[in-house]
Length: 345
Image (cartoon, rainbow, N blue to C red; front, side, top):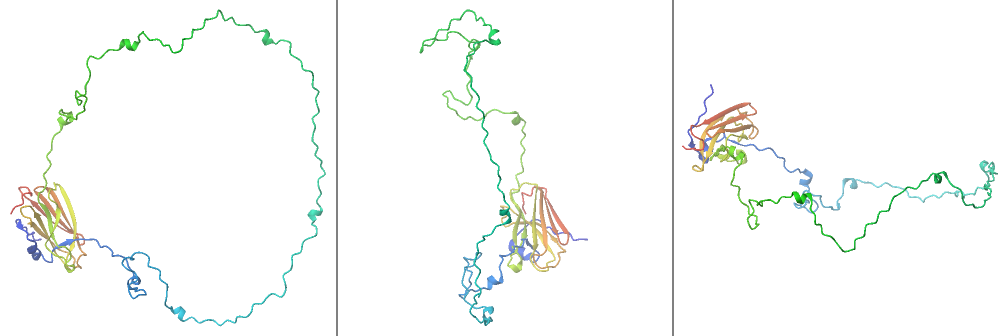
């Protein structure tokens, strides 16, 4: 039968005393490994020509300055010159032939015959031109034409003298049907002397009449968290630190998860201490704790524990610790008759 976790009744939490009580069983926030700045042995050990590091801090990360090589290499030291007899160069005894102009004839040129075709321009014969005569006869269109009787002529309209106009004294349908309004419409937000003044809306709407106000929860005035160490002990970590999980003023429901890891080598157990901080107790109050065992003995920082806070309501909090490598889970539930906002001893 597993032993039931020990749950004290809201004891005051003092960081120094709590760190001494749970020394070696605390957890610390897990931080992912980040690689350092890349470097090479050649760049680190190179001293340059002046006896100091050739790459100064101002030039680090950029191209190295160009400097001439003043030393000697093993290839140059072991080089042996080859004895070569430098004799005079020999000139050719036969002079180059001179170009000769071709004076013969080819078969293509000898067999060529020029065409004997003679092109003559065709001349159009001159046609005789007759005497010019005037047409004195008639046509069928002219014989069948009958003039149209237009009737008596219509007198032309007299032209009005320029610069003189006449006034329209009649009426139109739009003017006859027009009704003068009995009263003038005035906008409600415009005053009598035509100055626009913004006035608040004092009426109501259907949406406002049907709206039902719902009071949201006021949230937790206390902040809930865990007791952890700042880092691993061998790296200078200090225990008795407060790791905030649920901040003050957070309304339920809310779920917060943190990744933690071990603080010493070969650590086998971890204590999950739940701490609440209120304005009345600024140092903190220990609401309860439970133990998570079965951790594999490895070096510090290699084993990971996932802690989850589930604030179900103002009077119910669930705290769960899950060990991933060993597939182990423990949890503790805080239930109070009153709200957790009134955390007192």
